[in-house]
Length: 365
Ligand SMILES: NC(=O)c1ccc[n+]([C@@H]2O[C@H](COP(=O)([O-])OP(=O)(O)OC[C@H]3O[C@@H](n4cnc5c(N)ncnc54)[C@H](OP(=O)(O)O)[C@@H]3O)[C@@H](O)[C@H]2O)c1
Image (cartoon, rainbow, N blue to C red; front, side):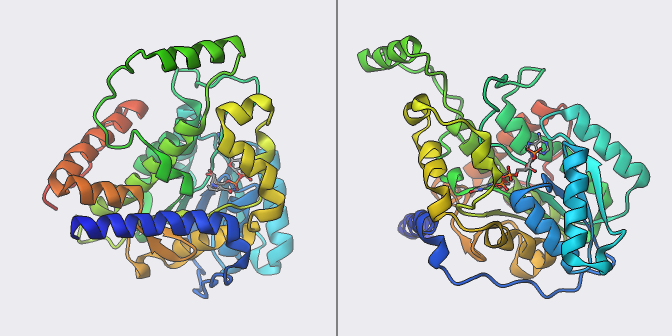
């Protein structure tokens, strides 16, 4: 694509997304997949509420056997009962709940070990669990010092995909619930940041922040984790495509602005309006503007059910493929530099979860 085309396509996607954030309720409802998923197995993480619960319900409606991977087994079991009561008899005995805390690599390993011993081949793996910020008054890092938002939203899924890859069926679909917020990620595929120069303004901002006890914003980590998901879907697709025996596919999507429990989970005080104004605005306007979870989840369940038919590796919104930040960077950097930086990023993910997992893709592929 010519450079001018990349810019045009990127900014069109970005402005359409911003428009959709505010006016999603005016959009035509999305299609529901009609594919019969009898005999197929799905894992949906964070499936006890919101978008994950809606995706799991839809896949059960299409006759799949669904595993809700939840950090609270109690909440997960209630969600499973809720799904069976909504879908009816045909889903009885086909909706299960297994414990999984994506913020703990130990828990991810435990889940996968159990799957390896007891589970069947996986046809749909939906990485949906996520948080916008760490819960109020709780640590912002995991026990081993990693950013809680990054591990919960991305690194846990990266490790899980690696461990479960041998158990994916030949036509498996891996789907990641990303976000429009991924467009604001500034660190993705960038060389290591140089220390910020100390200017009068930066010192003043720091001083005011300390005096008012503002703390730091989780928005950059959230955006980064969501951009990592988009990049991972792209690279995983290349990895799948390099093996001609498989027709697996990987996809990322944004649910757009969707009314869910996620907004109740972060406190908004006057400080939030200074450190995290976007989250504060979203929370304040959610009930008037956001789409319901049925619509927010539709692109995800549609991709999980029939993703490969629409081509893999892409980033989707409202069942339309968009130019993501990843596609934009690919166009601007050129293929060779993009793959070089992607390989470095992949290496940091491997380090983060202490595994070795060859990306399986050459620079020129
Ligand atoms: N709502 C939106 O407008 C919006 C927009 C863009 C992207 N998203 C993304 O959509 C996904 C689903 O969010 P939602 O809006 O449906 O919010 P939600 O109702 O809060 O759902 C999030 C789910 O993730 C689970 N979860 C959180 N941390 C977890 C952990 N450490 N281990 C396992 N599960 C964990 C939650 O479990 P608990 O019930 O135990 O907390 C819950 O089931 C998230 O990835 C979010 O970033 C949402």
